[in-house]
Image (tube, rainbow, N blue to C red; front, side):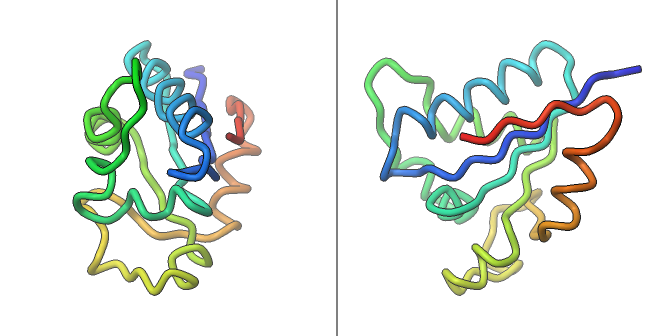
Length: 120
């Protein structure tokens, strides 16, 4: 049975080290063959928009756009429904490959038998 990792990122520019750690852990897991689902919530919601990840800077950290591109290509990236609504972000606004879904989907993924959930 293949293990899966569900990572919920609540931080963005407001807590750059925590944000970067979440993207890095998710990307390393993906590169290791783990099924990865990354959830953008709270301030990280903005990274679902084109160009926003490129604005993120943290010394000695992997570039956020590269990590996000890899996660979109090889895993699943989801923008929280309520977080998107609070920021007036719609499905037409987000990067290709990012879906918008709610808590029910997160709970399903996090409670799957083979899943490990992390919140940053």
